Amino acid sequence: MAALMIYIIALIIIAALIIFVIIFRYNRHLDKVAKGEAHDTHSSIPEPRTAAGVSYKIVLMVIVIMTFIGVSTVSGIVSTMQSKMNNLEYNNRNLNILINQLQEDIKQQSSRVEDFTYNMGDVNFDTYTVPIDTKLMLKEYTDDTDVVLVAGGNSYDMNNDGNGMYSVRVDRNIFDEDYESRIVIKEPGRNYSEYVDFPSSLYYDYFPMPSMNCSFSYYSRLGKMVTEGNYTMLMGNNDDIESVTATYICDGQDIKNMDITDETFNQETIYLDKDLDVKRDLSIRFVIVTKSGFRIEQQQMVIYEDFDYPDDYEYCRIYDPNGKLLWEDDFR
Image (cartoon, rainbow, N blue to C red):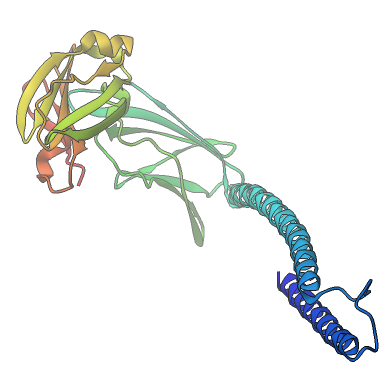
């Protein structure tokens, strides 16, 4: 663009010089005519007005042409740069994938664990524990190698089954949410520690915990909040469900209660009523009762004008058949 401006300025200067020369020569011609030294008929020198008009049109035409060429050039440069940026983003994504893969490969190569597996049994509802049979295979080992599994704040000595194989049965509480389980490999004079993927939060595996796919929104009409939305229940362990209810809550008060057991089993879409009396927020409390009498209760806010609402609006709780609270998450 700087070069284009230089060309335009130079062109204007040249045009001005041409007009100046024509005016100078035209004035000299008029002087000669006045003195009788020349005749004004068929003069080869154009009038200054004509010369200026022609020069203006020529300059304007050249400026338009050069501007078009400049814009086309810049557009081509921008398109090329955009294409290069897209290629750079694509290459950057591929590079990140490659780096992550290399990091995973390095982690696996540096790990002394060849394989780590577990199998969960049936829950004991007297102790709320689950037996987990765990097996481990080491890449390198000696006769003096011992392995300890650390999970849920407890340590479990694994049995040496020979040929680098180790095993242990662990009774883990279904409400234990310690995710950082690890193994400790003990050898004479040195110990190794590695994190392993050991199950926790087992209540998700043994209880029909509420979950939904949803879309909610609101708008104001004549000073009143109008709500719109729908949700679909997505839950596992449906075979253990006795009933499911949904309660709509506004300003801490229940405004509507519904049985949605069939909709849950069939994964049907449930739409909000258009005539809900909602003032500034809307929460939904789901209550799932299992065939064995356990009750899972979850309440969450789905529509709100601001974030200033009581802390106890959202929670998830599990009660035993006698109504005793077993586990709670207040989402804080």
